[in-house]
Image (tube, rainbow, N blue to C red; front, side, top):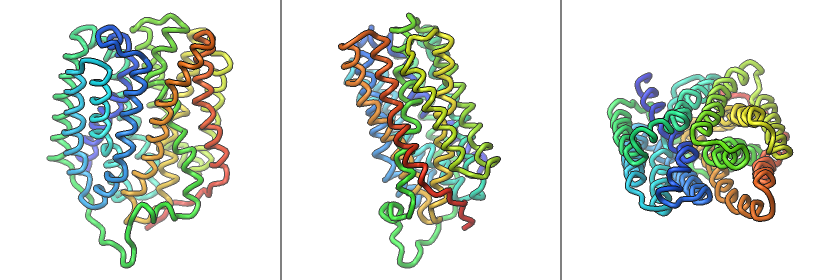
Length: 396
């Protein structure tokens, strides 16, 4: 079981890396392929769309054939194939295609580990374990910052992507060989076990707006907009961008580790999620109102966004408490689909929002509008979440 989780976590490290690498690659891809920040916003959005659309079939596959084959096959074909396509890209459309394939390949990795946690560990431990996996896996976020910048500087971006192709294929093979699936459950009599059954669960709908909004700001800013923001407003070069995004990445890791213990300490999923996302909203509001603050202050605010924007495991633990055992795979992937789809929609919409604002005013005003764009969904999600039930974990 430990070996199974170890290789799934290694796959999640790659998933975090791929969604974060474009911020650092922006300057070289613009120079060599003519890919603008707006083009890369589309590429990252396509990654999230592919990832999100795969969650329903991934949930079905987890419940029916288990995480070993689901993760191993998709990570090899999609992740390894997409990394190779990225290495051969000749323009923005090549990057778009590569990120779609990589999104498909990464789509089952985190949910494979969550499925094992939900099926093989006590329910009360789910939030802590879910946060720990994201925390450790977020080393990929760090690797996609300063270390990636140094590697690209040393061997070039194409050689870097070819190396990542080999690493991805090796991890996929290890998952396929070493992962052990939990024992399959018989289908309860008279229960179809479909996604519609999950959507009929009372109270679950009130979680969905914040599920869709909570990660969008941290993912969008860390994954893409931090680099252009630091360049346009603070005159940062690639090394400084790498250092600042490294700080934000470290904050995201710390947040994932902090939400799990806080959840158990307070004995309430709801209070932890409410408090954390309220602070996230305050940080985004500060960046909206004063985007041109000093570099140190801006870095601190980005770190706060990263730390408190890491509430996804706590939200998943809250949602997990609603799911009966035979719907766990479909349930966790449904919540993940809402989260990832929210990120994808934010990525797509962020490009025209920024371009319109940039055409109307200064870079500072444009990024103020962008931070407001990320703030509004969080506030709306909090308003719905206030009325959700703080349901205790099921013991079945």
